[in-house]
Amino acid sequence: MYEVEALLREYDRARAYTDDLWKDLSPDEVVWRPHENSSAIGWHLGHQAHVAHFMIRNLTAAEPSPDPALDAIMDSAQPEQFRGALPTVERLTAFRDTVAERVHARIGDIAGGRVKAPDQLSVVATHLLVALINHEYQHDQWIGEVRSEALGHALPPDPETSQVTRLDGYLVLNPLA
Image (cartoon, rainbow, N blue to C red):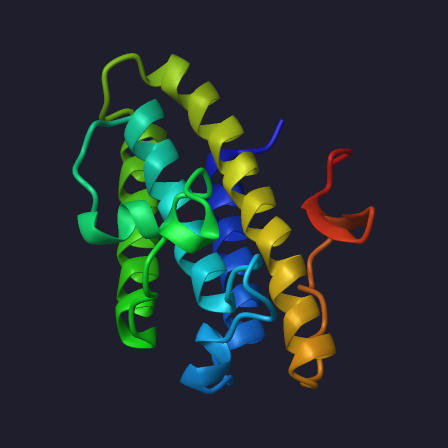
């Protein structure tokens, strides 16, 4: 089983890979939708953070959303045509960074035993981080496809870690590690 501290490093590595996929794109490229029934790269960026916050909030600590106005926009249960306009790149970046800080803070409290039921929450935190990492990479696949195939930008190299492999074309945390 993975250790929580190692998983936090992999979470940061996955987020850094996501940044490699989009930080050099123009704001217009980030909000562009290939067609009406697909989501923009910017939506995927916000959705990755939204899911991370949602899972941390619901599985480890009830806390308010860092940007409640984004909740309905970034929820995949909401059909594309009803999600509304995407926020600016700056707001997306702030949202992603705030959620990552909260993930680190809450998981750090769990790893440090500063919670009730620390052993039980350590099990939850481990599985939660694996899911968050794999979810980040899941959406990175789509971001990468739009980046390379539709926008004509080269892809960055895969993350340099033995903890990640490809399954069905997707990066995932190595299930055999």
